[in-house]
Image 1 (tube, rainbow, N blue to C red):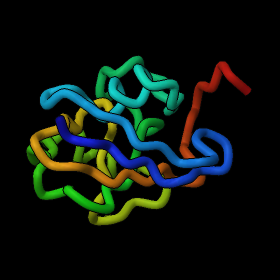
Image 2 (tube, one colour):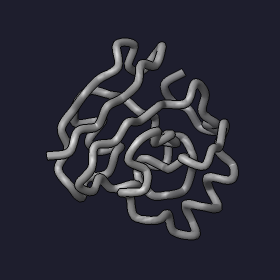
Image 3 (cartoon, rainbow, N blue to C red):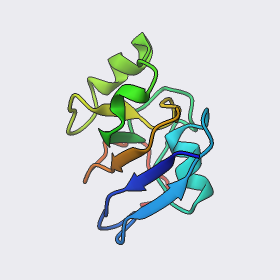
Image 4 (cartoon, helix red, strand yellow):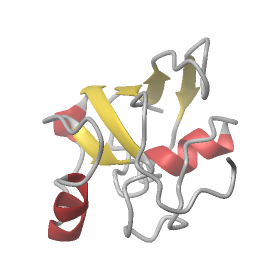
Length: 112
């Protein structure tokens, strides 16, 4: 099973984490199942950018983003070539190294 290696993030995952994920699961669902609370304001409906992540290794193993995801990513804070919405990016058969951005743009945050 592929591993998802989450780099340390001050608030969400201070120690970093290594988890196993079944191919076909989204990065977000794998993270949530393992206690890594990535924000996801639109409830995984591909309508916001709060679950934006940077895939530092293994990016090319992911299916390409669709047009809606690409348009949303243009609005994400800290956009880079390796940016994906974790609610849309499905794990394939390679390990992934995932970085959570320091900030997120959340117009409707219920946890703050």
